[in-house]
Image (cartoon, rainbow, N blue to C red; front, side):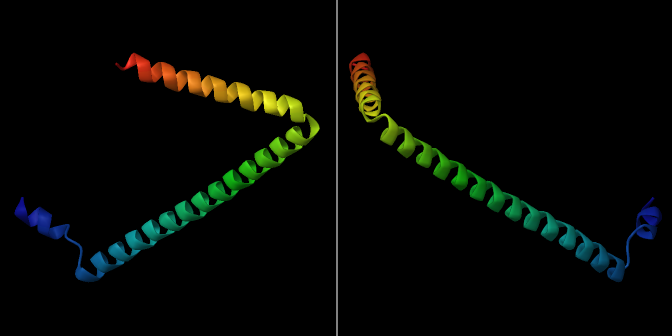
Amino acid sequence: MQADVLKNMPTPDEARRQVSKVRSIVSEAVGDSIRSAGRAIKHGRLAAEDLIDEAEHTVKQQPLGSVGVAFASGMLAGALITWIGFSRR
């Protein structure tokens, strides 16, 4: 039993090659992940900029409607905060 285990043991050079191979695979995977995350961040930033540009355009085209939506949103947020504050007592 012990002899079988010793027969399957890699030599130090084989072990170094295997470690080097694993290190290379892990390094490549980490690099791919970093590049993918960078692309996702860039895509998100561009989407946010597009949303801001669209909102600016809408406000310029419909200023009264924009003020009404902002007012209603503020009233709703205030009512919700007040309701949550009183319900916890």
